[in-house]
Amino acid sequence: MDNEQLKSNLTSGKHWLRLVFMLLFAAVLQLASLVMWVIVAVQFLFSLITGEDNQHLRRFGHSLSTYIYDVLKFLCYSSEEKPFPFADWPVSNPEPVDAPEAAAPAVLSDNNAPEKATE
Image (cartoon, rainbow, N blue to C red; front, side, top):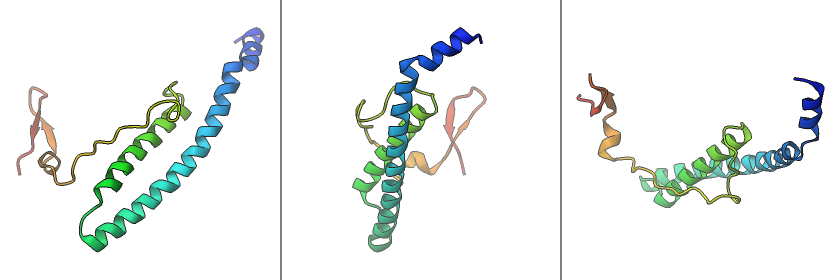
């Protein structure tokens, strides 16, 4: 890399603007992680007391974990798309815990098509 390209990179406004967004999203990530731990604790207590999890907390936890993933992708340069509030909040549609598909893991047959595992 030559000096002109380095100087161009250092004076480029887009790199410094991205740094500002990265610092902002790093702070949001810390807050979102804290909220996730609160959800984990409340969900555990809820299931301990009632015997089952709270569907609303499950959906919110799923969408929050997707949001955290989106923030991490942006911070690691895996995505140029800025997460919420610059994009829509992730839609949550988690699978039920007792879904039949979740009970048996999929295995690959000879033709590489997923099949249900037999017990």
